[in-house]
Length: 381
Image (cartoon, rainbow, N blue to C red; front, side):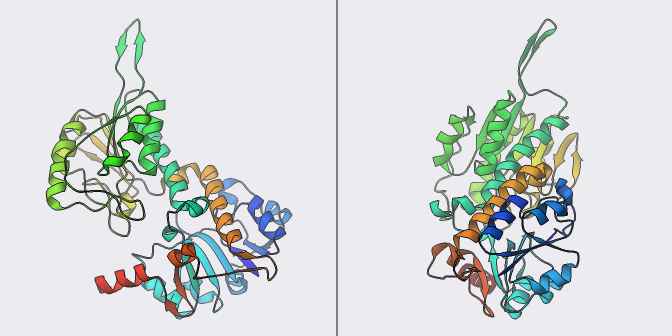
């Protein structure tokens, strides 16, 4: 089987889908590895390093696409890329299938079997393949470091001859993987941290990191089967915003990480709440790419709202691309090797397997993922 790895073409994408060490391990398992020339340039990794790992280096992107039986990348391929793939090829990437119906239909029409890394079930056996969690971990760290660099204050408390400097106050909204890492990072920097999540069961985790958990009585909330917070009603959102406004008003930094799987991110921090914060405060919206948690945030931009800096950075893990690539590459390798047939030297798609059933979107000319198919039908997209 020819396994091709693309150089990322998405603007600003600095991560790499597969590093030489994992190329070498797949090559040792019997895969014929082909990588696009310049694939590791963003990390300072030469084509020679990939060659030494057992890969052929292809200068022609179209030629690589036409040759690959299994195509690996971080971002989903473009329509032009898909049209160059051989029929019945397999591709694995971050597809964003809920919002990319046209691309999913192109993959279906080309009889390409597509695997969405976002759709890998959150079960114990799949943790080693969980790209979303590994990248969210880094996003939470980066969000705090970006905020620290923009805030005109230091995070830790200091007692000096010139007087005592009080610790910065950080409010983290959402205590999933990214939120918990943001809490831990802010605490390590010495900040006073408060956090909120609609799932009361995460209170213990928040407290274990040394932060205070903001309790808001919202009635029934909880989480989905995939481990994400359930969407709130408008009444619950109003109650939540009222309580959070008081915390935002006394916070130096607010970091929002709330996302609802398969839906736009909920608006949590309103314009009124932003204006209620002190001039010089900083908000980092980690959900800017999926709709945004903060009124006025714009993907890829920094916006000044009455003296409050609202940061809507895209691709937060890409800001620490070396470690993001290490983690992504390991996740990708673990997924491929899990379903690698050592005798036939082929990646096997077995729908009797729970993970495969959850993450395969198209196969043999059909959209086979029930969740995605139902989503398209319900939204008449």
